Image (cartoon, rainbow, N blue to C red; front, side, top):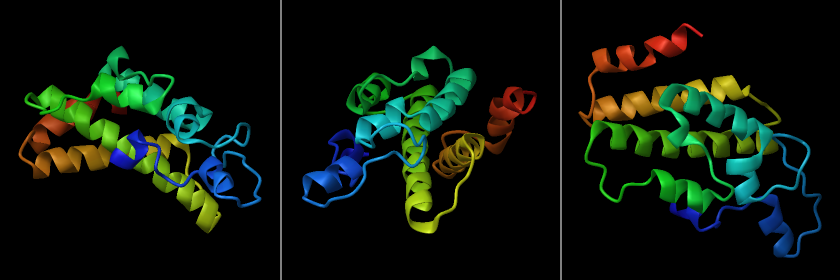
Length: 150
């Protein structure tokens, strides 16, 4: 997450800044130039995922214009409540899965839908929270029940 917050991941704009002559097009939406902020907060693909997160968790989980602002909105320095832990984990899992999906498209010429990426992020969040003892499997089932109806 530090690398995302400090814009240190190798997006197409960063590769161009290093002198490589490549086309800069986001492989997720195929519309705009790829940058850290675009990929994680403005890209239509990512916004579909964040919309699902907001539907599940409420409007406090809306991405900001820049990724650092999004992280600051959600980040508690020391998560101390279950809600803090869930938010902390969802933020990390969604960003990680967006990055993995971006790399899958660039390097493997394969893709998943935004809905699939969302569910992978949610499953990994639930698994991590259970493993850390923050919530039980029963709580996970209760937490996910409203989502399964839609």
